[in-house]
Length: 510
Image (cartoon, rainbow, N blue to C red; front, side):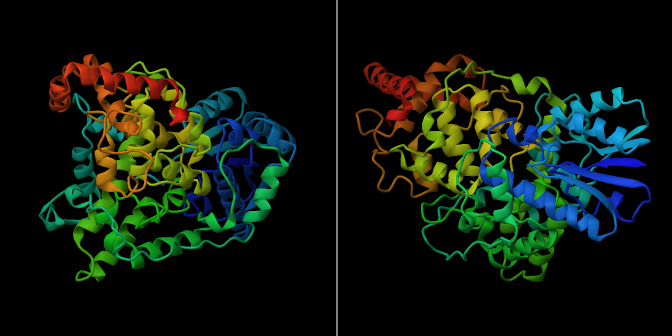
């Protein structure tokens, strides 16, 4: 008999494995304590993955495949992945072991070591999900000093002939990023978020609680928006096309206290668990655009395509190019702890309170909240990137290390020294005010750099530039800000640094 392993983020029912029933083939899926606890995860993240795995298992059974499924309260769940596989190979007299290539380095390494030990024929297969090979980005940038995402994105547009016309970008521009920075001011109106089917979700939650898994965040069915099945994920994608795409590009960077989702699709979990395939998502969105040319502008669609065809594939390529050394990068020599309020939202800074509350209640925040609010503050107070990685990997349902690590350690914390981004994504309160309403009614004054009611981001920003100026002395993109730093009078700079130090030493007091 042949044993085939399916991991929790490999739920691609369109994979060639599942096209036809194969005799003497056993599929195994396991809800592992190992995977639920290698970092402390959000309760909704664990529930989302286990719920999706259970639906997928049933889908395989309905198609006639032989499946063994071990839930989180089984004895198998307490063993490691390798231990379980060894037991199954012995008990079921397995003559061949096959698996889909994991997208996390640690699991890739574990399975590589496992098949070297078991003494039976073993084969690994591509997940048939991504639009690039693992090493495609590395080959594309071979001999180049800077791994510029824009060039890779254009290559991908041509490769898949998406938003192209006669080898030229549709609309005459490759990138409409400058059109994607509008502040939402309560118009245009936003439809309610797509409401997922909650059947079976509560039972999964109860099982996780019974298993005594340590988690963060809150579980509330009314705030649970993750699809468990492929049909539900497809419905969520169509909901985005019909109701949200029309304004997605304009407001994709906007933030607002009254609207958690704005015009975002919320399909990242379905993509990263492989319930949805990126190419079908892109083709569905582009097809909807072509059917509604008078309603939807190309800038709305291109902004979405760039996130999936460009940024998502780019980040995966960076991950496999740079691992395992990438996980230890700390280029800026930051060593502070993440504040306690990242787990409670108990802060007087309205932007952080709102973004962290959203994260704790929904296991989701969109990319600008992650980059320019929580990530920005963590970098400004000079947190160790390990601290930041563990929080991001745990709190977001769509966070799997291949996508989380280069986004956090690379783009957000600049711990890789510029592999992903040419400059750190740091800002004062001015940017936050520009892109949100967070500053309205905040305890702090966004216009002040010093004084008890001055916005903490302001003093922290200038202090960060001063503390790390040696790191940026040869960075042309930081030159203007360093010149502005030099123009701040010495006495004021001393006051800025004094306030910044008090925040860094005790961020939970703010």
